[in-house]
Amino acid sequence: MNRKGYTSTNILAVCDFNMCFTFALIGWEGSAHDTRILVEALRNSSLKFPHPPEGKYYLVDSGYPTMKGFLGPYKSARYHIPQFRMSRAFRSPNEVFNYHHSSLRSVIERTFGVCKARRRILQNMTSYTMKVQFQIIWSCFTIHNYIRRMGSNDLEDLENLEDINQFQEGERGFEDDDSESSFVYSQPTHEDTQQIIIIRNNIRDQLSNGSTS
Image (spheres, rainbow, N blue to C red):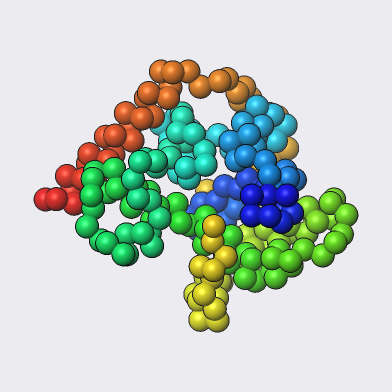
């Protein structure tokens, strides 16, 4: 049972800016915290989580910690795009950063939105066994990637049919490399965390200076 009061499956997913899923971990209960699932993906080398190269990072929402390889927003400022539509003036440099962060990270929301809009079973899963339900989700993600990579303008087609935003809240497939990962997860150190915070602050200052010049 999730925090909204109904049963669900929590899915950890990564996508690229072409709206293709590059990793998915399916099977955790809806009540599981996002951070708990991410840590499991990082610790379990058999899951082959695609760790970002040195100096790169994933954009993550506030449900995940800001740490090495994972850049989250500032939690003390507005974040979601609709909040900025009500009042466009930025109240602080942190909001400038959050606005741009949210604009880029919205690609994962749109990716899920397209997938759910195309495949209605994802919105109201039939009472199959858990194994079959997970296979259905995998199949939907795989078909979604195929359509995106074959050049179909899936997003534009859907926007002409319905508002996909209602579903919000070298390319690789789903880790199709069978080789063993050499990555060994280690708990982020204080220095690692401070380094990514410094990077975030530097990006914030550059964006803030650009918005006021």
